[in-house]
Image (cartoon, rainbow over all chains, first blue to last red; front, side, top):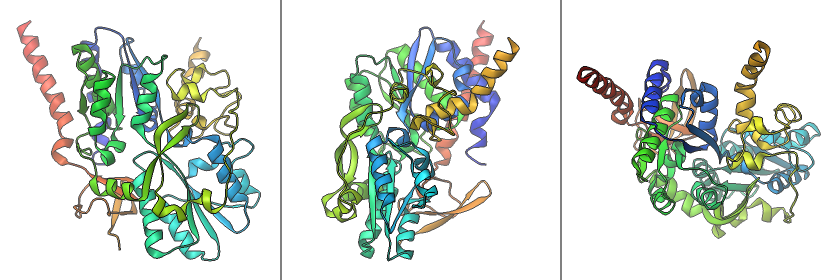
Length: 370
Length: 67
């Protein structure tokens, strides 16, 4: 497929890897924010092409993973109500709440449906006027325009049986939280290309300056990621702390203006708790007052409660880049994609799921060879 | 109400909203996420990584000759 296959060329990847070896003189720690990039790195073995001095740590950019336990419990509470159809992205259904998950609710008779797009949830609401249809929306800046459009259209159409449980999050406040932590080892960031396709990268300029870190907006294919890493290392080696754009074929400096406009209209910035990390000020999106009628939490009168994370799940440390999945005692033993302890083992963007899927067999083979 | 495009994902066709890429035309490549096209792929920019790699080769040759 055009714009995909050519960015997976093994020979060119080797060439970029050789250049990375050539320019690296010291150890550096680089974080890729996005879970999609984490999967590509582990799947294609990009980390294994790098010099030993380069450490990639995996960031919190997995929306399903950072959705707090309390919000998943709320979705479960809504799904349990009679007459409700709860819709969400597929990954959300298997994420454990404090007692059960949405897929189990479905098995027990709740009407829980997987949708590909928030617009599909809107369609379900139009087709079922006597039912309350709720979309459980999670995601970063990439997903917010889609959610915003669903709310906007519902409002235009005067749909009264449609609402949303929103847990949208934003990247820059998370970078600030990570950089402010005394444990932070990160010296450079690969920013998520698709997030920047929407918001552009102007808001990263003050971050690079304040924290004196290079930030390279990077795509998702192996050649993109390798070039992003090379650009970050070149900045580190030369003592530069700039925002650069590797993914210029999809990302413009100003981002997607019409998308940003609708997001600003429908949402407001709110404080948000991140699973495994804690509350980060002004790090999320909630419905703006004008669209409060579509807020499922208000509609269903859900109360706020606070629950403890299971202690045996180390996903908080994994999401902050402080631990790699195989370093968790429960990894691939007590915690598997079939019986996950935490969301990082469930999501197609979760670091634990990536290591489980792509690295476990190799480890077994290595163990067998020994 | 909203422009919708038929998108070919490597042989699988799906519809996506073009509300956020009003400039998109038939034949364009777009980045799609949860049913929405978010960005048009810029063909010139798309070539740059390959040009960079080619330059690296040429530079390597020059450096090789100097040695």
